[in-house]
Image (cartoon, rainbow, N blue to C red; front, side, top):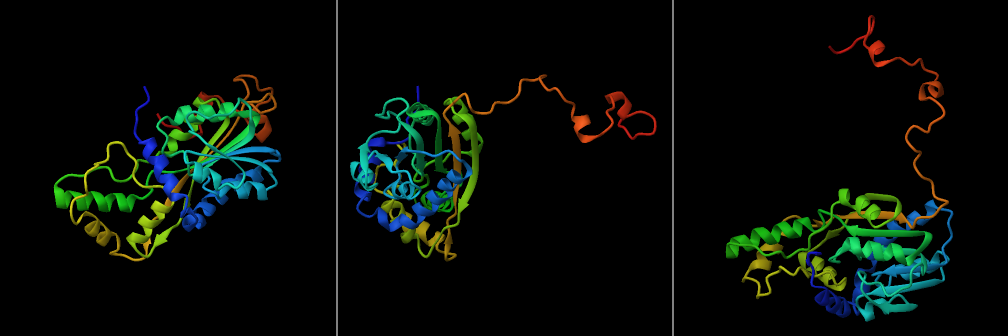
Length: 298
């Protein structure tokens, strides 16, 4: 059974409220989307029908500017989906409401990090792609908001003797390529980039998180009123060095829906030429390599 980590209903409500002010964080969202969509320049494949998930009014216009006229925007929040400026669908990434093979491109920029069943969501996305369709995604990686997380933990322990999860958990890069492969993607690639962000105040950081609909939605959070002085103490620690560095590690995922035209690794033992011949080198057996006149380990 899939463990439930996030309150998806709360996430939808917070995204709905954030839709009115998400433009305040458009520069950050655009910078992240730029890094992701640059990968379209690495392929000669031309795309005609795209699905963008959770783009918050930023990704859909960028796809259209690249010549993809047919773009559908999906978000948990109807108001946030409508910001894409075209066909808008309110829906859940874990239960995509699209026919199999409906798109030849799916883009999810900073939008899959709060699904409870990420493997299941990836399978849904792969099914929505046509053969040889492309999936691009970015997720905040391990270390995101680390300074905020640490300041809140230290302050809460000081004022109450314990700590509640107040910042979401984030994924690790080492898991991502395996998840893509498990979901049935061909040629899976996962790598990491970083957005260097800095803030003049802790309140500025909090305002950006609210504008993006990125407040804490962890089910295990403490729902009670926060201890008195918690945020004042945590924010004072954060602001001890200004501007506050708040780098955003981005896990970048690329995968293709399988197709017969895609390259595959050669079958072991099927080579018809030797590496030694290609290099013009003399080939020796393992015993010869450590024989007389050569240095070897006993």
